[in-house]
Image (cartoon, rainbow, N blue to C red; front, side, top):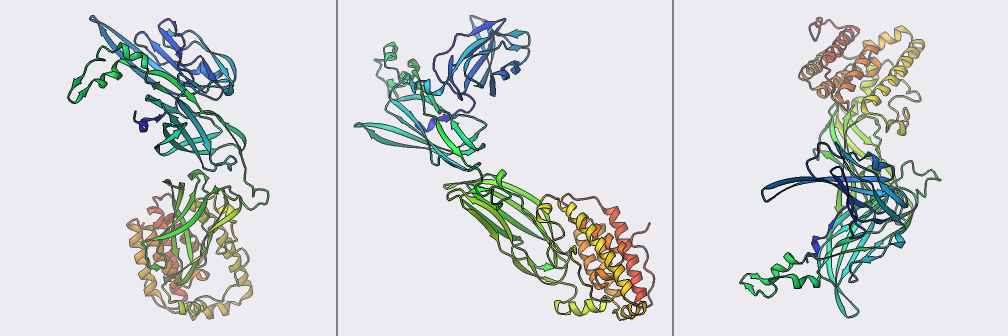
Length: 586
Protein backbone atom coordinates (compact mmCIF):
# COMPACT_ATOMS: atom_id res chain seq x y z
CA UNK A 1 0.00 0.00 0.00
CA UNK A 2 1.38 3.36 -1.00
CA UNK A 3 0.18 5.74 1.70
CA UNK A 4 0.82 8.75 -0.51
CA UNK A 5 -2.07 7.58 -2.64
CA UNK A 6 -4.59 8.70 -0.04
CA UNK A 7 -6.83 11.29 -1.70
CA UNK A 8 -9.30 13.85 -0.35
CA UNK A 9 -12.87 13.64 -1.59
CA UNK A 10 -14.76 16.84 -0.71
CA UNK A 11 -17.91 16.02 -2.64
CA UNK A 12 -19.15 13.12 -0.49
CA UNK A 13 -18.57 11.18 2.74
CA UNK A 14 -19.47 7.55 3.42
CA UNK A 15 -20.30 6.92 7.07
CA UNK A 16 -21.06 3.24 6.61
CA UNK A 17 -20.01 0.63 4.09
CA UNK A 18 -23.45 -0.99 3.92
CA UNK A 19 -25.45 0.00 0.81
CA UNK A 20 -29.16 0.58 1.03
CA UNK A 21 -31.48 -1.45 -1.16
CA UNK A 22 -32.01 0.45 -4.46
CA UNK A 23 -35.46 1.90 -5.04
CA UNK A 24 -36.57 1.45 -8.66
CA UNK A 25 -39.58 2.99 -10.33
CA UNK A 26 -40.13 3.53 -14.04
CA UNK A 27 -36.51 2.95 -15.07
CA UNK A 28 -34.60 5.09 -12.51
CA UNK A 29 -33.04 3.55 -9.40
CA UNK A 30 -31.99 5.52 -6.31
CA UNK A 31 -29.61 4.32 -3.60
CA UNK A 32 -27.52 5.87 -0.81
CA UNK A 33 -24.16 4.68 0.43
CA UNK A 34 -25.43 4.67 4.01
CA UNK A 35 -28.88 4.45 5.53
CA UNK A 36 -27.68 6.24 8.68
CA UNK A 37 -25.53 9.37 8.69
CA UNK A 38 -24.36 11.81 11.32
CA UNK A 39 -25.47 15.42 11.49
CA UNK A 40 -22.94 17.58 9.66
CA UNK A 41 -21.64 14.70 7.52
CA UNK A 42 -22.13 14.15 3.82
CA UNK A 43 -23.27 11.09 1.90
CA UNK A 44 -23.85 10.01 -1.69
CA UNK A 45 -27.08 9.45 -3.57
CA UNK A 46 -26.63 7.44 -6.78
CA UNK A 47 -29.28 7.63 -9.52
CA UNK A 48 -29.00 5.02 -12.31
CA UNK A 49 -31.08 4.46 -15.46
CA UNK A 50 -31.73 1.11 -17.12
CA UNK A 51 -31.33 2.77 -20.51
CA UNK A 52 -30.43 6.13 -21.90
CA UNK A 53 -32.16 9.06 -20.19
CA UNK A 54 -33.63 11.83 -22.31
CA UNK A 55 -32.89 14.47 -19.62
CA UNK A 56 -30.75 15.04 -16.52
CA UNK A 57 -32.33 14.47 -13.10
CA UNK A 58 -34.23 17.35 -11.52
CA UNK A 59 -32.55 17.77 -8.11
CA UNK A 60 -34.64 20.70 -6.88
CA UNK A 61 -36.87 18.50 -4.61
CA UNK A 62 -33.74 17.62 -2.58
CA UNK A 63 -33.17 21.20 -1.47
CA UNK A 64 -35.94 21.09 1.12
CA UNK A 65 -34.07 18.80 3.56
CA UNK A 66 -30.56 18.57 2.08
CA UNK A 67 -27.71 20.75 0.86
CA UNK A 68 -26.64 19.65 -2.63
CA UNK A 69 -22.83 19.87 -2.55
CA UNK A 70 -22.01 18.56 -6.01
CA UNK A 71 -22.79 16.05 -8.76
CA UNK A 72 -20.87 13.82 -11.18
CA UNK A 73 -22.05 11.75 -14.13
CA UNK A 74 -20.94 8.50 -15.80
CA UNK A 75 -22.27 6.11 -18.44
CA UNK A 76 -21.55 2.48 -19.36
CA UNK A 77 -22.33 0.09 -22.19
CA UNK A 78 -22.35 -3.75 -21.97
CA UNK A 79 -22.62 -6.36 -24.72
CA UNK A 80 -23.51 -9.87 -23.44
CA UNK A 81 -24.26 -12.68 -25.88
CA UNK A 82 -24.65 -10.10 -28.60
CA UNK A 83 -27.18 -8.13 -26.59
CA UNK A 84 -26.28 -4.53 -25.90
CA UNK A 85 -27.37 -2.60 -22.79
CA UNK A 86 -26.64 0.95 -21.75
CA UNK A 87 -26.98 2.82 -18.44
CA UNK A 88 -26.27 6.26 -17.04
CA UNK A 89 -25.50 7.22 -13.44
CA UNK A 90 -25.50 10.46 -11.48
CA UNK A 91 -23.73 10.64 -8.10
CA UNK A 92 -25.09 13.45 -5.91
CA UNK A 93 -23.29 14.60 -2.75
CA UNK A 94 -25.76 15.59 -0.01
CA UNK A 95 -25.61 16.96 3.51
CA UNK A 96 -28.71 16.76 5.77
CA UNK A 97 -30.07 20.03 7.18
CA UNK A 98 -31.63 18.50 10.32
CA UNK A 99 -31.70 15.38 12.48
CA UNK A 100 -34.30 12.62 12.44
CA UNK A 101 -35.70 10.45 9.68
CA UNK A 102 -35.60 12.28 6.37
CA UNK A 103 -36.96 11.22 3.00
CA UNK A 104 -35.18 11.58 -0.30
CA UNK A 105 -38.18 12.32 -2.53
CA UNK A 106 -38.87 10.81 -5.93
CA UNK A 107 -36.48 12.22 -8.55
CA UNK A 108 -37.42 12.56 -12.20
CA UNK A 109 -35.14 12.48 -15.24
CA UNK A 110 -37.28 13.27 -18.24
CA UNK A 111 -39.90 10.50 -18.45
CA UNK A 112 -38.08 8.39 -15.84
CA UNK A 113 -38.61 8.59 -12.07
CA UNK A 114 -37.33 6.94 -8.88
CA UNK A 115 -38.98 5.86 -5.66
CA UNK A 116 -38.44 7.75 -2.37
CA UNK A 117 -35.60 6.61 -0.08
CA UNK A 118 -35.58 7.04 3.72
CA UNK A 119 -32.42 8.04 5.59
CA UNK A 120 -31.76 8.44 9.31
CA UNK A 121 -29.73 11.37 10.61
CA UNK A 122 -28.27 10.98 14.11
CA UNK A 123 -25.94 12.85 16.43
CA UNK A 124 -22.27 12.39 15.50
CA UNK A 125 -21.49 11.11 19.02
CA UNK A 126 -23.79 8.12 18.56
CA UNK A 127 -21.99 6.86 15.45
CA UNK A 128 -19.33 4.14 15.85
CA UNK A 129 -15.75 5.37 15.58
CA UNK A 130 -14.80 2.48 13.28
CA UNK A 131 -16.58 -0.22 11.28
CA UNK A 132 -14.95 -3.10 9.43
CA UNK A 133 -11.58 -2.79 11.20
CA UNK A 134 -10.00 -2.21 14.60
CA UNK A 135 -6.45 -1.73 13.34
CA UNK A 136 -6.86 1.82 12.04
CA UNK A 137 -7.12 5.00 14.10
CA UNK A 138 -8.04 8.49 12.81
CA UNK A 139 -7.66 11.74 14.75
CA UNK A 140 -7.86 15.47 13.97
CA UNK A 141 -6.33 18.31 16.00
CA UNK A 142 -6.37 22.10 15.71
CA UNK A 143 -3.32 24.16 16.63
CA UNK A 144 -5.38 27.08 17.98
CA UNK A 145 -8.77 26.39 19.57
CA UNK A 146 -9.75 30.08 19.71
CA UNK A 147 -8.72 31.68 16.40
CA UNK A 148 -9.81 35.07 15.12
CA UNK A 149 -12.46 35.45 12.47
CA UNK A 150 -10.91 34.68 9.03
CA UNK A 151 -7.61 33.73 10.65
CA UNK A 152 -5.70 30.90 8.96
CA UNK A 153 -5.13 28.09 11.49
CA UNK A 154 -3.34 24.75 10.82
CA UNK A 155 -5.42 21.59 11.34
CA UNK A 156 -3.66 18.19 11.32
CA UNK A 157 -5.28 14.84 10.49
CA UNK A 158 -3.33 11.77 11.72
CA UNK A 159 -3.87 8.18 10.55
CA UNK A 160 -2.27 5.23 12.35
CA UNK A 161 -2.67 1.75 10.90
CA UNK A 162 -1.23 -1.68 11.66
CA UNK A 163 -3.27 -3.37 8.91
CA UNK A 164 -2.39 -3.42 5.20
CA UNK A 165 -4.72 -1.00 3.44
CA UNK A 166 -5.66 -1.89 -0.14
CA UNK A 167 -7.32 1.45 -0.94
CA UNK A 168 -8.52 4.45 1.01
CA UNK A 169 -9.80 7.99 0.71
CA UNK A 170 -9.94 10.71 3.33
CA UNK A 171 -13.15 12.75 3.33
CA UNK A 172 -12.99 16.30 4.72
CA UNK A 173 -16.10 17.89 6.31
CA UNK A 174 -17.82 20.86 4.71
CA UNK A 175 -19.73 23.77 6.22
CA UNK A 176 -20.55 27.40 5.54
CA UNK A 177 -19.06 28.18 8.98
CA UNK A 178 -15.48 27.50 7.87
CA UNK A 179 -13.16 26.95 4.90
CA UNK A 180 -10.84 23.96 4.85
CA UNK A 181 -8.01 23.68 2.29
CA UNK A 182 -5.26 21.05 2.13
CA UNK A 183 -1.68 22.32 2.30
CA UNK A 184 1.40 20.43 1.17
CA UNK A 185 1.98 16.69 0.72
CA UNK A 186 1.16 13.86 3.13
CA UNK A 187 3.92 12.95 5.58
CA UNK A 188 4.57 9.22 6.12
CA UNK A 189 6.49 7.75 9.07
CA UNK A 190 6.44 4.84 11.51
CA UNK A 191 5.85 4.61 15.25
CA UNK A 192 5.66 1.91 17.91
CA UNK A 193 2.43 1.22 19.79
CA UNK A 194 2.38 -1.52 22.47
CA UNK A 195 5.48 -3.08 20.94
CA UNK A 196 3.95 -3.15 17.46
CA UNK A 197 5.09 -1.05 14.51
CA UNK A 198 2.38 1.10 12.95
CA UNK A 199 2.41 3.25 9.85
CA UNK A 200 1.61 6.94 10.43
CA UNK A 201 0.23 9.32 7.81
CA UNK A 202 -0.27 13.04 8.54
CA UNK A 203 -2.08 15.58 6.40
CA UNK A 204 -2.26 19.34 7.09
CA UNK A 205 -5.20 21.60 6.30
CA UNK A 206 -5.63 25.34 6.76
CA UNK A 207 -8.85 26.23 8.56
CA UNK A 208 -10.38 29.71 8.09
CA UNK A 209 -13.45 30.39 10.28
CA UNK A 210 -16.16 32.34 8.48
CA UNK A 211 -18.42 32.90 11.50
CA UNK A 212 -17.65 34.21 14.98
CA UNK A 213 -18.70 32.43 18.15
CA UNK A 214 -18.82 28.70 18.93
CA UNK A 215 -18.62 26.39 15.91
CA UNK A 216 -17.94 22.66 15.49
CA UNK A 217 -15.81 20.90 12.89
CA UNK A 218 -17.57 17.60 12.02
CA UNK A 219 -15.52 14.37 11.94
CA UNK A 220 -13.15 13.46 9.13
CA UNK A 221 -13.92 10.06 7.59
CA UNK A 222 -11.41 7.54 6.24
CA UNK A 223 -13.03 4.84 4.15
CA UNK A 224 -11.72 2.11 1.88
CA UNK A 225 -10.79 -1.56 2.08
CA UNK A 226 -8.24 -3.71 3.92
CA UNK A 227 -6.94 -7.12 2.97
CA UNK A 228 -9.51 -9.87 3.62
CA UNK A 229 -7.80 -13.11 4.77
CA UNK A 230 -10.96 -15.11 4.05
CA UNK A 231 -10.66 -14.30 0.33
CA UNK A 232 -7.37 -16.17 -0.12
CA UNK A 233 -9.04 -19.58 -0.31
CA UNK A 234 -10.99 -18.52 -3.40
CA UNK A 235 -7.79 -17.78 -5.38
CA UNK A 236 -7.28 -20.63 -7.93
CA UNK A 237 -3.71 -19.41 -8.42
CA UNK A 238 -2.86 -19.58 -4.72
CA UNK A 239 -0.36 -22.44 -5.28
CA UNK A 240 1.04 -20.98 -8.49
CA UNK A 241 4.74 -20.18 -8.13
CA UNK A 242 4.72 -17.64 -10.95
CA UNK A 243 7.24 -16.77 -13.63
CA UNK A 244 10.36 -14.65 -13.29
CA UNK A 245 9.14 -11.07 -13.00
CA UNK A 246 5.53 -12.20 -12.41
CA UNK A 247 5.24 -13.46 -8.82
CA UNK A 248 2.12 -15.30 -7.73
CA UNK A 249 1.27 -12.40 -5.35
CA UNK A 250 0.24 -10.36 -8.36
CA UNK A 251 -2.99 -12.37 -8.46
CA UNK A 252 -3.93 -11.56 -4.86
CA UNK A 253 -5.66 -8.30 -5.70
CA UNK A 254 -7.51 -9.92 -8.61
CA UNK A 255 -9.41 -12.32 -6.34
CA UNK A 256 -9.34 -10.29 -3.12
CA UNK A 257 -11.45 -7.15 -3.47
CA UNK A 258 -10.76 -6.40 0.18
CA UNK A 259 -12.90 -5.88 3.23
CA UNK A 260 -14.61 -2.46 3.40
CA UNK A 261 -14.00 -0.25 6.42
CA UNK A 262 -14.85 3.28 7.66
CA UNK A 263 -13.09 5.17 10.47
CA UNK A 264 -14.14 8.52 11.94
CA UNK A 265 -12.32 11.21 13.92
CA UNK A 266 -13.82 13.06 16.87
CA UNK A 267 -15.48 16.42 16.10
CA UNK A 268 -13.55 19.58 17.01
CA UNK A 269 -15.16 22.42 18.94
CA UNK A 270 -13.68 25.92 18.83
CA UNK A 271 -14.55 29.50 19.70
CA UNK A 272 -13.94 32.10 17.00
CA UNK A 273 -13.00 35.57 18.23
CA UNK A 274 -13.97 38.86 16.57
CA UNK A 275 -11.73 41.93 16.23
CA UNK A 276 -10.51 42.71 19.78
CA UNK A 277 -9.69 46.30 18.80
CA UNK A 278 -13.06 47.13 17.22
CA UNK A 279 -14.41 48.84 20.34
CA UNK A 280 -11.42 51.18 20.57
CA UNK A 281 -11.95 52.34 17.00
CA UNK A 282 -8.32 51.61 16.11
CA UNK A 283 -9.30 49.51 13.09
CA UNK A 284 -11.68 50.37 10.29
CA UNK A 285 -10.70 47.12 8.56
CA UNK A 286 -10.15 43.83 10.41
CA UNK A 287 -6.98 42.08 9.18
CA UNK A 288 -5.82 39.24 11.46
CA UNK A 289 -2.40 37.90 10.41
CA UNK A 290 0.92 36.64 11.70
CA UNK A 291 2.76 39.47 9.98
CA UNK A 292 1.98 42.32 7.56
CA UNK A 293 4.43 44.24 5.40
CA UNK A 294 4.33 47.11 2.89
CA UNK A 295 6.93 47.42 0.12
CA UNK A 296 7.39 49.66 -2.94
CA UNK A 297 9.37 49.35 -6.18
CA UNK A 298 9.80 51.62 -9.19
CA UNK A 299 9.55 50.49 -12.80
CA UNK A 300 12.18 50.96 -14.13
CA UNK A 301 14.15 50.35 -10.96
CA UNK A 302 16.07 53.66 -11.10
CA UNK A 303 13.80 56.06 -13.01
CA UNK A 304 14.49 59.62 -14.10
CA UNK A 305 11.67 61.87 -12.91
CA UNK A 306 10.60 64.70 -15.20
CA UNK A 307 7.81 67.21 -14.93
CA UNK A 308 4.66 65.88 -16.61
CA UNK A 309 6.05 62.37 -17.23
CA UNK A 310 4.47 59.39 -15.45
CA UNK A 311 6.59 56.78 -13.65
CA UNK A 312 5.09 53.51 -12.47
CA UNK A 313 5.34 52.58 -8.80
CA UNK A 314 4.29 49.16 -7.46
CA UNK A 315 3.13 49.25 -3.84
CA UNK A 316 2.68 45.74 -2.39
CA UNK A 317 0.72 44.75 0.71
CA UNK A 318 1.80 41.33 2.08
CA UNK A 319 0.06 39.43 4.90
CA UNK A 320 1.18 36.08 6.34
CA UNK A 321 -1.69 33.84 7.45
CA UNK A 322 -4.43 35.74 5.58
CA UNK A 323 -6.30 35.56 2.28
CA UNK A 324 -6.52 38.13 -0.51
CA UNK A 325 -10.17 38.98 0.27
CA UNK A 326 -9.05 40.21 3.70
CA UNK A 327 -6.56 42.76 2.33
CA UNK A 328 -7.88 46.35 2.31
CA UNK A 329 -7.56 48.86 -0.51
CA UNK A 330 -4.93 51.56 -0.09
CA UNK A 331 -5.49 55.29 -0.45
CA UNK A 332 -3.15 57.26 -2.73
CA UNK A 333 -3.45 61.00 -2.27
CA UNK A 334 -1.86 63.73 -4.35
CA UNK A 335 1.07 65.51 -2.78
CA UNK A 336 2.79 68.85 -3.26
CA UNK A 337 4.53 68.62 -6.61
CA UNK A 338 2.99 65.36 -7.92
CA UNK A 339 -0.25 63.77 -9.01
CA UNK A 340 -0.76 60.09 -8.10
CA UNK A 341 -3.14 57.87 -10.08
CA UNK A 342 -4.14 54.26 -9.40
CA UNK A 343 -3.75 52.29 -12.66
CA UNK A 344 -4.40 48.67 -11.61
CA UNK A 345 -4.75 46.28 -8.66
CA UNK A 346 -3.49 42.68 -8.71
CA UNK A 347 -3.87 39.93 -6.08
CA UNK A 348 -2.32 36.52 -5.46
CA UNK A 349 -1.36 33.96 -2.81
CA UNK A 350 1.93 32.13 -2.19
CA UNK A 351 2.26 28.99 -0.08
CA UNK A 352 5.15 28.90 2.39
CA UNK A 353 6.21 26.65 5.26
CA UNK A 354 4.79 29.25 7.68
CA UNK A 355 1.42 29.52 5.93
CA UNK A 356 -0.26 31.44 3.12
CA UNK A 357 1.16 34.82 2.11
CA UNK A 358 -1.63 36.95 0.63
CA UNK A 359 -0.45 39.68 -1.73
CA UNK A 360 -2.14 42.78 -3.13
CA UNK A 361 -0.19 44.92 -5.60
CA UNK A 362 -1.22 48.48 -6.42
CA UNK A 363 0.20 49.90 -9.68
CA UNK A 364 0.20 53.71 -9.54
CA UNK A 365 1.44 56.44 -11.86
CA UNK A 366 3.40 59.24 -10.21
CA UNK A 367 3.39 62.43 -12.34
CA UNK A 368 5.58 65.33 -11.13
CA UNK A 369 3.94 68.72 -11.71
CA UNK A 370 7.13 70.70 -11.05
CA UNK A 371 10.85 70.26 -10.74
CA UNK A 372 12.79 69.86 -7.50
CA UNK A 373 12.38 67.58 -4.50
CA UNK A 374 8.97 65.96 -4.02
CA UNK A 375 7.96 63.96 -0.94
CA UNK A 376 5.64 61.01 -1.43
CA UNK A 377 3.64 60.53 1.79
CA UNK A 378 3.90 57.45 3.97
CA UNK A 379 1.21 54.73 3.81
CA UNK A 380 -0.13 52.86 6.85
CA UNK A 381 -2.22 49.70 7.30
CA UNK A 382 -3.67 48.64 10.65
CA UNK A 383 -3.80 44.91 11.44
CA UNK A 384 -4.28 42.51 14.35
CA UNK A 385 -1.52 40.13 15.46
CA UNK A 386 -3.26 36.72 15.40
CA UNK A 387 -0.73 35.35 17.93
CA UNK A 388 -0.81 38.07 20.61
CA UNK A 389 -4.12 39.74 19.71
CA UNK A 390 -2.44 43.15 19.77
CA UNK A 391 -3.22 45.98 17.34
CA UNK A 392 -0.30 46.72 15.04
CA UNK A 393 0.46 49.05 12.12
CA UNK A 394 2.47 48.34 8.97
CA UNK A 395 4.10 51.47 7.52
CA UNK A 396 5.64 52.31 4.16
CA UNK A 397 7.92 55.29 4.92
CA UNK A 398 7.70 58.50 2.95
CA UNK A 399 10.04 58.78 -0.02
CA UNK A 400 11.72 61.84 -1.54
CA UNK A 401 12.20 61.99 -5.31
CA UNK A 402 13.89 64.69 -7.37
CA UNK A 403 12.26 65.74 -10.63
CA UNK A 404 13.57 67.71 -13.58
CA UNK A 405 11.36 70.69 -14.38
CA UNK A 406 11.03 73.26 -17.16
CA UNK A 407 12.22 75.89 -14.67
CA UNK A 408 15.25 75.03 -12.49
CA UNK A 409 14.23 74.59 -8.83
CA UNK A 410 16.40 77.51 -7.70
CA UNK A 411 14.59 79.92 -10.03
CA UNK A 412 11.04 78.71 -9.43
CA UNK A 413 10.22 81.28 -6.75
CA UNK A 414 11.52 84.22 -8.74
CA UNK A 415 9.83 83.04 -11.92
CA UNK A 416 6.54 82.62 -10.13
CA UNK A 417 6.75 86.16 -8.72
CA UNK A 418 7.33 87.59 -12.19
CA UNK A 419 4.64 85.51 -13.81
CA UNK A 420 1.84 86.23 -11.32
CA UNK A 421 0.35 89.58 -10.22
CA UNK A 422 0.87 88.61 -6.59
CA UNK A 423 1.60 85.54 -4.56
CA UNK A 424 -1.87 84.39 -3.60
CA UNK A 425 -2.50 82.99 -0.16
CA UNK A 426 -3.71 79.42 -0.49
CA UNK A 427 -7.16 79.28 1.16
CA UNK A 428 -8.10 76.56 3.60
CA UNK A 429 -9.30 73.51 1.69
CA UNK A 430 -7.23 74.36 -1.41
CA UNK A 431 -7.40 71.50 -3.93
CA UNK A 432 -3.70 70.71 -3.55
CA UNK A 433 -4.21 70.07 0.14
CA UNK A 434 -4.74 66.49 1.29
CA UNK A 435 -7.70 67.72 3.35
CA UNK A 436 -9.94 68.41 0.34
CA UNK A 437 -11.29 64.85 0.36
CA UNK A 438 -10.99 62.58 3.41
CA UNK A 439 -8.87 59.47 2.93
CA UNK A 440 -11.81 57.13 3.50
CA UNK A 441 -13.73 58.80 0.68
CA UNK A 442 -10.80 58.81 -1.74
CA UNK A 443 -10.25 55.09 -1.10
CA UNK A 444 -13.71 54.32 -2.46
CA UNK A 445 -13.38 56.36 -5.64
CA UNK A 446 -11.82 55.49 -8.97
CA UNK A 447 -9.02 57.69 -10.32
CA UNK A 448 -11.35 59.38 -12.80
CA UNK A 449 -13.86 60.25 -10.09
CA UNK A 450 -11.10 61.65 -7.86
CA UNK A 451 -9.78 63.85 -10.64
CA UNK A 452 -13.28 65.14 -11.40
CA UNK A 453 -13.86 65.96 -7.74
CA UNK A 454 -10.49 67.67 -7.32
CA UNK A 455 -10.97 69.58 -10.58
CA UNK A 456 -14.35 70.89 -9.46
CA UNK A 457 -13.01 72.02 -6.09
CA UNK A 458 -9.96 73.59 -7.73
CA UNK A 459 -12.10 75.51 -10.20
CA UNK A 460 -14.34 76.84 -7.43
CA UNK A 461 -11.46 78.16 -5.29
CA UNK A 462 -9.54 79.59 -8.21
CA UNK A 463 -12.57 81.51 -9.47
CA UNK A 464 -13.21 82.81 -5.97
CA UNK A 465 -9.55 83.75 -5.53
CA UNK A 466 -9.43 85.49 -8.90
CA UNK A 467 -12.53 87.55 -8.04
CA UNK A 468 -11.12 88.57 -4.63
CA UNK A 469 -7.79 89.66 -6.13
CA UNK A 470 -9.59 91.72 -8.77
CA UNK A 471 -11.38 93.64 -6.01
CA UNK A 472 -8.19 94.17 -4.00
CA UNK A 473 -5.75 95.22 -6.76
CA UNK A 474 -5.98 98.25 -9.09
CA UNK A 475 -6.06 97.59 -12.81
CA UNK A 476 -2.92 99.66 -13.33
CA UNK A 477 -0.96 97.44 -10.95
CA UNK A 478 -2.14 94.38 -12.83
CA UNK A 479 -1.04 95.87 -16.15
CA UNK A 480 2.30 96.80 -14.72
CA UNK A 481 2.95 93.30 -13.43
CA UNK A 482 1.91 91.70 -16.68
CA UNK A 483 4.30 93.93 -18.62
CA UNK A 484 7.14 92.57 -16.52
CA UNK A 485 6.42 89.02 -17.65
CA UNK A 486 9.28 87.76 -19.89
CA UNK A 487 8.54 86.79 -23.49
CA UNK A 488 8.42 82.99 -23.66
CA UNK A 489 6.41 82.70 -26.86
CA UNK A 490 9.03 80.61 -28.69
CA UNK A 491 9.41 78.06 -25.89
CA UNK A 492 5.68 77.98 -25.24
CA UNK A 493 4.85 77.29 -28.87
CA UNK A 494 7.47 74.57 -28.98
CA UNK A 495 5.78 72.79 -26.07
CA UNK A 496 2.35 73.23 -27.70
CA UNK A 497 3.67 71.76 -30.94
CA UNK A 498 4.96 68.73 -29.02
CA UNK A 499 1.61 68.41 -27.26
CA UNK A 500 -0.17 68.43 -30.63
CA UNK A 501 2.13 65.77 -32.06
CA UNK A 502 1.74 63.46 -29.08
CA UNK A 503 -2.02 64.05 -28.92
CA UNK A 504 -2.49 63.07 -32.57
CA UNK A 505 -0.50 59.86 -32.04
CA UNK A 506 -2.70 58.91 -29.08
CA UNK A 507 -0.03 59.58 -26.41
CA UNK A 508 -2.29 61.54 -24.05
CA UNK A 509 0.12 61.29 -21.13
CA UNK A 510 2.96 62.64 -23.24
CA UNK A 511 0.71 65.40 -24.51
CA UNK A 512 -0.28 66.27 -20.94
CA UNK A 513 3.40 66.49 -19.94
CA UNK A 514 4.06 69.02 -22.69
CA UNK A 515 1.00 71.00 -21.59
CA UNK A 516 2.39 71.18 -18.04
CA UNK A 517 5.62 72.60 -19.44
CA UNK A 518 3.64 75.12 -21.52
CA UNK A 519 1.63 76.11 -18.45
CA UNK A 520 4.84 76.71 -16.48
CA UNK A 521 6.24 78.94 -19.22
CA UNK A 522 2.92 80.79 -19.41
CA UNK A 523 3.16 81.81 -15.75
CA UNK A 524 1.41 78.94 -14.01
CA UNK A 525 -2.20 78.56 -12.92
CA UNK A 526 -2.70 82.12 -11.63
CA UNK A 527 -2.20 83.44 -15.17
CA UNK A 528 -4.64 80.98 -16.76
CA UNK A 529 -8.25 81.66 -17.67
CA UNK A 530 -10.97 79.35 -16.38
CA UNK A 531 -11.39 77.83 -19.85
CA UNK A 532 -7.68 76.95 -20.04
CA UNK A 533 -7.68 75.43 -16.57
CA UNK A 534 -10.73 73.35 -17.44
CA UNK A 535 -9.08 72.13 -20.65
CA UNK A 536 -5.91 71.11 -18.78
CA UNK A 537 -7.95 69.31 -16.10
CA UNK A 538 -9.94 67.45 -18.77
CA UNK A 539 -6.77 66.36 -20.58
CA UNK A 540 -5.28 65.21 -17.28
CA UNK A 541 -8.38 63.17 -16.47
CA UNK A 542 -8.37 61.48 -19.88
CA UNK A 543 -4.64 60.75 -19.73
CA UNK A 544 -4.70 59.01 -16.36
CA UNK A 545 -8.15 57.45 -16.19
CA UNK A 546 -8.29 53.81 -15.02
CA UNK A 547 -9.96 52.88 -18.31
CA UNK A 548 -8.38 54.41 -21.40
CA UNK A 549 -10.68 56.86 -23.19
CA UNK A 550 -10.90 57.41 -26.95
CA UNK A 551 -10.46 61.15 -26.50
CA UNK A 552 -8.67 62.21 -29.71
CA UNK A 553 -11.57 64.39 -30.83
CA UNK A 554 -11.79 66.00 -27.40
CA UNK A 555 -8.02 66.51 -27.33
CA UNK A 556 -8.50 68.59 -30.50
CA UNK A 557 -10.83 70.93 -28.61
CA UNK A 558 -8.71 71.12 -25.45
CA UNK A 559 -5.49 71.99 -27.28
CA UNK A 560 -7.28 74.60 -29.41
CA UNK A 561 -8.39 76.27 -26.16
CA UNK A 562 -4.75 76.38 -25.04
CA UNK A 563 -3.67 77.79 -28.43
CA UNK A 564 -6.14 80.67 -28.03
CA UNK A 565 -4.84 81.12 -24.48
CA UNK A 566 -1.29 81.33 -25.80
CA UNK A 567 -2.25 84.11 -28.24
CA UNK A 568 -3.80 86.09 -25.37
CA UNK A 569 -0.62 85.68 -23.32
CA UNK A 570 1.42 86.95 -26.26
CA UNK A 571 -0.79 90.02 -26.55
CA UNK A 572 -0.52 90.86 -22.83
CA UNK A 573 3.28 90.74 -23.10
CA UNK A 574 3.10 93.57 -25.68
CA UNK A 575 5.06 91.60 -28.27
CA UNK A 576 4.23 91.58 -31.97
CA UNK A 577 3.62 88.03 -33.15
CA UNK A 578 1.89 86.43 -36.04
CA UNK A 579 -1.43 84.83 -35.37
CA UNK A 580 -1.32 81.14 -34.56
CA UNK A 581 -3.71 79.16 -36.76
CA UNK A 582 -6.03 76.64 -35.16
CA UNK A 583 -3.91 73.75 -33.97
CA UNK A 584 -6.39 71.35 -35.51
CA UNK A 585 -8.15 72.58 -38.67
CA UNK A 586 -11.89 72.50 -38.29
